Length: 508
Ligand SMILES: Nc1ncnc2c1ncn2[C@@H]1O[C@H](COP(=O)(O)OP(=O)(O)OP(=O)(O)O)[C@@H](O)[C@H]1O
Ligand SMILES: [Mg+2]
Image (cartoon, rainbow, N blue to C red; front, side):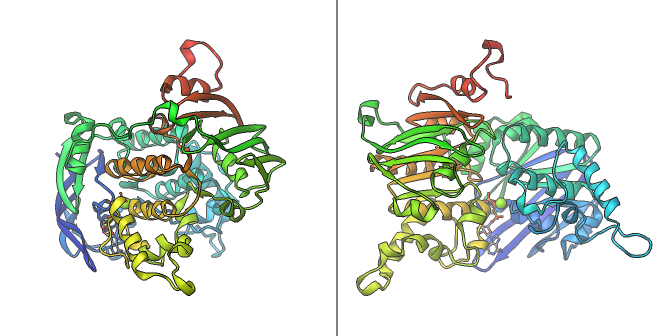
């Protein structure tokens, strides 16, 4: 077999952490090679080594049979190895074109920037991606999905031989993912070799030829995808079988609880006349396709975005909520979709991030922080959520992507909100830890906290929700009992609830 890349005995150490330990395997020319493993297994670190971001502590990389020693990403790129990082690396205030050509701007013969040509080439690349994006807007004002496409455009605008995707679909949904897969197929036809990291095993079975699994920085296996089942891969990742990943739902009688929150006639430019209620101690799932208005509904509810009309009742009493801070005062907390930008202080340590929002709770007499209480609370969070960190003083930016997400969750799980709203709670979280998060969310509900959960993962909505509200085009189209709901039923409504049997499952 023709090997394009040979990874030989790679070890990488960070202070207090051995992220990779003697990892060896090959990547074949033209294949899509999936890389799997739990949060903190070392996937991103290995890919950063291949793409010149980090250097290995020991070990060798051969590219086309030649040893390479990259000291920076540019060298890797010049040889044709590009990476699309888990954390986006776009410059927010620059436009899409400026980002795509960053560091390799096209110039006219006189030395001036050739803006016209750059824009033309950029739009050609985006056309290949089938993406319609405003190239002149600062990328910060684009949707997360479109920012992702700009990242990909940036990589394929250069002649790329090996393209590395580090959890590319973590911020995409539905047809955007389909579009990405089409793109991957096209790139493969053109001979591009790809390495693909994902926690979604379904995706891996769809697109990968082979897979490699890492665990705790060590190589576990490399196999043809046709040789393994989903269960095999999960077992390789976590070292045990995972059978039922959703906690038991309480019986419906217990759920005949008081209505805690009522939202009526929510209306703004995206949602229209949205009404729903939330009972004490229940988990309410909000389902719908991308663009159905789920996140917008929640943002409008907590006052993050403006509204034309809105009535909110808490325990039957009308309240005004004009900002997220006011929502918090009323005991409503939102754990947002893009946690990186909205939930963490990357330069602060794990401990301070977790306790940031609960300083009051751990304050002792005279407002001094009760160190012991703080310590035990943080220890408990780290243990419950399986946060992989050498110690609680580690800066959050040094944690793996999935572990950063767990820190945000930990922070919110320890607040004293009566209502917690989770927007895509398990995005980027590995299969084993997902199970833990489901348990924690259910525990909160059992304790009487009311939960609203938005998720694009249908099994998650079905597995967790006591009741499901389905949205379609900015409206609530149906409410379903979560104990009996099926994916067919939810999809039927999520796609508009019209038509006959045959097109019930179609996506648009
Ligand atoms: N710059 C760094 N400084 C210190 N430790 C680091 C650094 N980068 C990574 N690590 C540690 O190395 C280990 C592997 O991290 P890595 O990001 O490679 O995991 P991953 O497999 O990509 O996980 P995820 O699925 O969560 O993204 C983790 O324990 C992480 O905390
Ligand atoms: Mg990672």
